[in-house]
Amino acid sequence: MGSLADLHSHSTFSDGRLTPAQLVDLAYRNGVRVFALTDHDIVDGLPAAFHAAGRYTDFTLIPGIEMSTDVPGNEVHILGHFIDWHDQTFLRRLKQLQESRLGRARQMVEKLTELGKPITWERVQTFAGEGVVGRPHIALALVEAGHVSSVNEAFDRYLSRNGPAYVERDRLGPEEVVRLLLDVGGMATLAHPRELLESGSLEVLLSNLKGAGLTGMEVYYQDYLPEEIETLRNLASKFALIPLGGSDYHGLGGPQQREPGDIPLPMEPVEALLSLARARGALERARIAHTR
Ligand code: AMP
Ligand code: ZN
Ligand code: FE
Ligand code: FE
Image 1 (cartoon, rainbow, N blue to C red):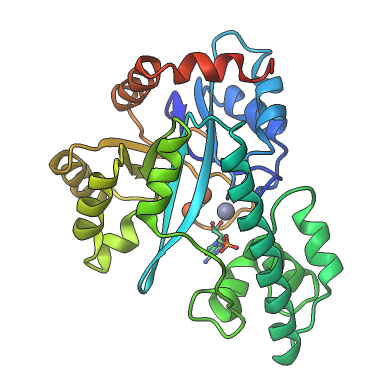
Image 2: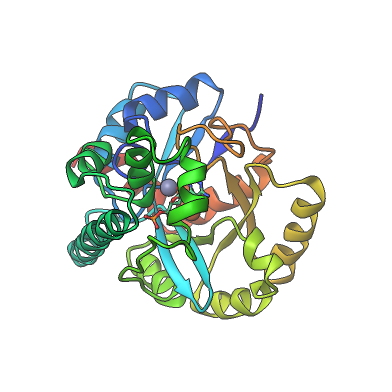
C-alpha cells in the first residue's frame, strides 16, 4: 500500500478517533515501521503509544507533536519530532495552550447557539474525551444534533477560519514554535504547506523559518498530486529542508483522508531525519522514554 514511514498522525488525545495503541497497531499492520504520533498541542498520548510500540522490535516510534501557529491570514502548523516530552517548561507551555483551547471552544458553542444551531458543551467534551478539545469535536456534535450532515459541512458552514462560529485562540508565531521545539531537542517540520504555496506566502515563510532552525517540510501528504509534490520538493531543496510527509490520519473519514502509511514518502529523507536524531542523541532518548 504505502510507505514504510508516516510522520504525522492524531489520536484520541487530540482530534483523532483511535487511541494511541490502536493507532500504533494499525500503522504496524499497514507496514509502517517508522511512525510519529503528533497530536495537536499535547504529548499525553505518548506513554500509551510507546507502550504499544514496545511490543514490536522492528518499529521506531518518534515522539511528536503538531503545534498550531498563525501568520496574518493563514494558519501554519509545525510538527515537532523527537521532542523531549518530559521537559517541564515545555509541558507548562502546552498546558496554557490547552486551557486556551477550552475557553475558545466554549465560545464557539455559544456562537452556534446564537446562530440557532445549539449543541451542548457536554457533547463536545464527550467527543474530546481525555485529550485537548478542537474544532473537529464541535463538528461531531453538530453532526449528531442534525445541524449538518458531515464534519466537512460543519467546517464549510460554521467552523472554518472565516466561518460565522469561528473563534481565534491563543497562538504562538511560527518562528517562536520552531525555537520552542528546538529548545526541547526536537526537529521542526512545516506541515501541509499547499495552502501557503497557493497564497504565495510560502517562500517568505520558509526563509524566516529556516533562519529559526526549521529542519523539514511536508512534501508527501494526503491527496497532494505528483506535480504539487514536485514543486514542494524543489522548494525543500532550495531551502535545504528535508522533504518529509505523513498521512495526518485522524480516522474521521472525509475525502482527503488517507490510511496510516498511505503516502508516497520515500525512506531516504526519513533516514536523514533519523540520522540527525541519532547524532543529537534524540533517538536514544526516544528509545528509553517509555521506561521513565
Ligand atoms: P483546531 O485545532 O481546533 O483549530 O482545529 C483544527 C483541526 O480541524 C485541523 O487540524 C483538522 O484536523 C481539522 N480540520 C480543519 N479544517 C477541516 C475541514 N475542512 N474538514 C475537516 N476537518 C478539518
Ligand atoms: Zn487534527
Ligand atoms: Fe495540521
Ligand atoms: Fe495534523
